[in-house]
Structure formats: C-alpha cells, structure tokens
Image (tube, rainbow, N blue to C red; front, side):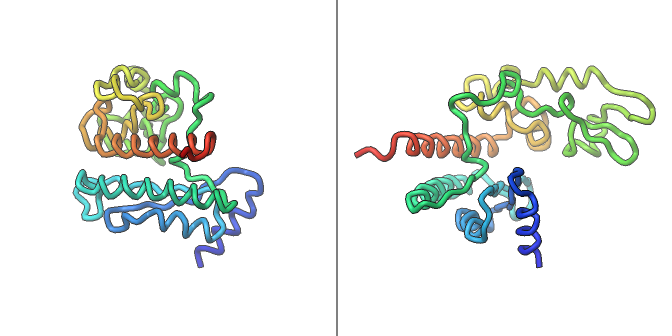
Length: 222
C-alpha cells in the first residue's frame, strides 16, 4: 500500500530533490541492509537516521556505538562495491563538500533556529523550532499578541561552535556546526552542551564520507 505511493511521489517530482527517509534504533543496527533495500526498490536519494531517545527501550546508548560505527563502515564499503558495478545513489549522511561547502555563518552555528526560522503553533505561540514547542522557557512570543523575545533570538545567534566548550577543539566542528540545539537542551540541559551520542555518530559519518571522497577521487591504492 505504502511503497507504490512513495514511488508515485518520486516520479511526480521529476528532477526536483527528494529524500526517502527511515530511522534505525537499537533493534535494527544492521541498517545498511535497510539502505540497500530502499535502493533496490528504486530510490536513489536515501537517508536513514539514528533514533533520538533517552529512556525508551529502543534508544541508542553508548554501548551501541561500536556496532553502529561498524555498520556505517560496512555501508560505506557496500556503496563503493555498488559503484564499481555501475550503481549509484546518495546517502544523505555521507554527502560532503570539501571544495566549497556552506557559508561561514552556517559553519559557525549550523542550525538557524530562532533566527532563520521559527515554529508557530495553531495558537500563535512562537518557538525557536518545532522541537522546542511546549517548552514554556523557550516560548519566544505570540503572533496574535505581537510579541517576540529579541533577547532569546540573539542568544540563539550566539550559540555557535566557539561558545560551545565541547566544540571549540573538535576536528569536525566546521561540518557539524555544533549539532542540534534542541537535542543539546533535551539531553544535556543546555543548548551549548553537545549531546555526546550525536557528536560521536556525526564524527563517524564524516570519517566515512571523507573515505568515500578519497576513494572516488584517487581510487584504491596498493
């Protein structure tokens, strides 16, 4: 029922961008198989995201990371083998631009929540993004009342990689850009404290992305 509708949607997009997206949990750490199942179903723009959770039974923990790292490596190897056979698809988290990349402000703070965009509820309440909705301490104002917390907006603007202690010396900071502010707040209690699991996953994905870039550029060396 669902798959034909996905395919119809993609066909209707023509040359326009799309992503088919899934989620992996600690119950399906063999997610490279899921990526290739989507590819074999005809999709060529694919993203499989790690679940974000805390006390849920399916949440990823520090103990799951070695298996997840190995699976990212396995996925990268499978992608290379597939390309040798003439196949090609994009896996969102392995896309990296080492030549140009985003502008400086995006590298410094990445997420534009509270500045480049906000979330507005049906009641008109304004929040930095959809993940902050319902958190009263991050209510920025209300469009019906004509209110907006400019100080909070500026606080998010200052939440960049050099104001986040965990990020300052990190080799991945200009690609990660400080991670998700909402996740940082949800799991670390502070938008300026990096959520450790997300950090480690991001660094592993970047390692694999750089490896793929090197192999595609220079080929395998003896």
